[in-house]
Length: 238
Image 1 (cartoon, helix red, strand yellow):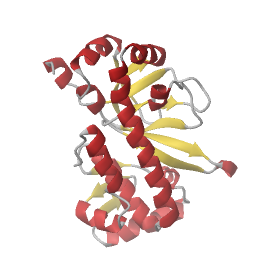
Image 2 (cartoon, one colour; image 1 turned 120 degrees about the horizontal axis):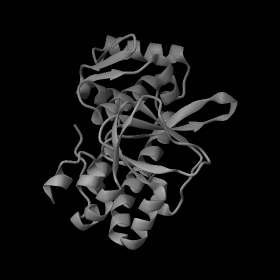
Image 3 (cartoon, rainbow, N blue to C red; image 1 turned 90 degrees about the vertical axis):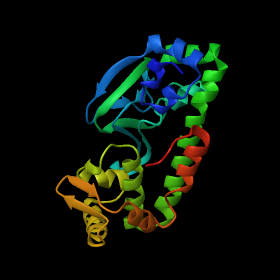
Image 4 (cartoon, rainbow, N blue to C red; image 1 turned 120 degrees about the vertical axis):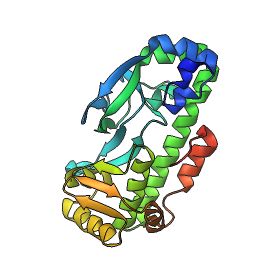
């Protein structure tokens, strides 16, 4: 691996074959992704793939009657636009930035063409497509079989894995979308976790206090998918 490639924090870029990196690098453009930036729109062709260096992206499914729920989170371990690996440049969901950060973007058409000529690159990126699908399945199971405070504990752990530091800046309204519940439910769940000394919540800021305690609170809903991230991507959890 060249020193240039090693300078990338994004795991998919840093761990790809050096020859694939050499062909991809000229296409990469560094961009800042502000809060709320919509990087993937439902039923619209995806213009760019985004390889995150920092920050966090959320994929949101819009339900009937105006109800939204998060189905996936992406950080420095992956990229927005995994459907491109499957020769598809659009999907039914939207993805937007919930924690601002930096990313390298590449035009979707250029990335698809590059993967056509470099099967090894497609196989490499397909591993992330695989683990993201596992995350979505795990989220569906968790939402259907665990109580709200356990779901919140899992979600906080997943976000903590993908950010620097212990503090998250998130509103209760935003959390209600992430968990698919009304705001009063989020408030109650936060108070329960805070009462157990697992977090500290103040207005729009949540501080992780006891990570191991959050794992116990998640009650088995966190860890299995993360082990697959490690197996398939070599991703080390915090």
